[in-house]
Amino acid sequence: MKLHPWNENFSWEKTERENYLILNEEQVSDFHEHGFVLLEDVLDLEFLSKVTEDLDAIESSMEDFLRTLPDERLTIAEADAIVFSIHAVTVSEAAREFARHPVFAKICHDLVGDNVRLYWDQLVYKKPMKPRPFPWHQDNGYTFIEPQQYLTCWVPLVDATIENGCPWIAPGRHVNGTLAHTYVDPLGYQCFEEPEDAVPVPAPRGSVVIFSSLTPHATGPNTSDSVRKAYILQYAPDGAVMLKGEPHEGEATSQEDQSNEGRQFPVLMNGAPVVGT
Image (cartoon, rainbow, N blue to C red; front, side, top):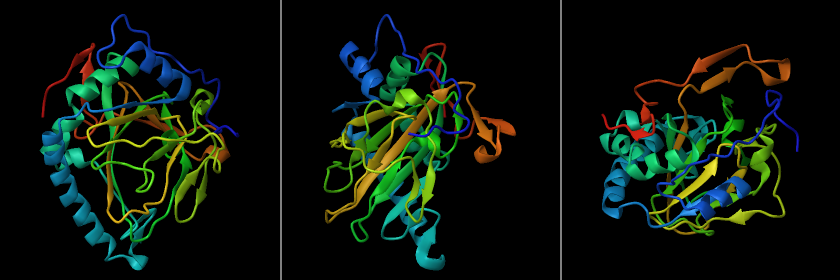
C-alpha cells in the first residue's frame, strides 16, 4: 500500500472514555482494531421515514438535473446508475435535525471527542438499472482533511444487502492513515483493488454502519430490482481543516477551516449535545 504524499508521521489515536454513551467496550475495541462497527436498531423508523421523504425529493431533483447533461453524467454521478446529492442539511430541516440526532451525538462522544462538527453530508442512491461497483477508497482520499481521523456514519434508508450494494470493509488498514488514490473513470477514486479479506456489512434499516475516514471501503453493484438508498453523515473534530494543493507536487499550499455554520454546525460542545436550527 502506498501512502498519500501528505500522510506523514500518522499515528492512530484511540478514544478513551470513563463512560461510553451508546457503544460498549467491545464495540469500541472492534472499531479501533478493525476500523468499523455496526449499530443495529438504533434509529426511530418513523423519523427515518420523514427524513427519507425529504431526501427522495432532493434525489429526484438531482436526477432530473443529470438528465439535462451530456451523457447524463456529472463526475461520478450518473442518471439511472448512482446519484449523489450533497449538503441536504442546507435545504431540509428534517435532515438538519437528523444530523444532530442523539444517536450521532453519542457516537461522536464515544469515538471522536468533546467538540465535534458535522463535516459533510450526502445522500447516495444506487440504482438497479445500471449495476456497477463503487471502488475501494478512503473518505479522506477524496479530500484531505487534517486531522486525518474523522468519522463516517453510513445510514441505510432501506435494508442494505449484498445484493443491492451494502458496504464492504477492508479491516485493519485504517491505522496506516491516508493512502494514495488514483482515479478510475467513471467510477471514482481507488486506493487498491479487491482485498482478499474484504468483509460485507449488510445493514438493516434503522441501523448505522460506523467507520473511520481512513477505513478502506467499497460498495458492490445493485443487482436487486429496487433502489439502494443511503444517507452519509461525517463528523470531524472542531478545528479540522482541508488541505489544498497538488499532492504530487509537494506540500499543501493552503488550508481551509471546516466550520461553515450553514452546513458544518457543531454537534457536540464540551461534551454536551448542541441543540439548534
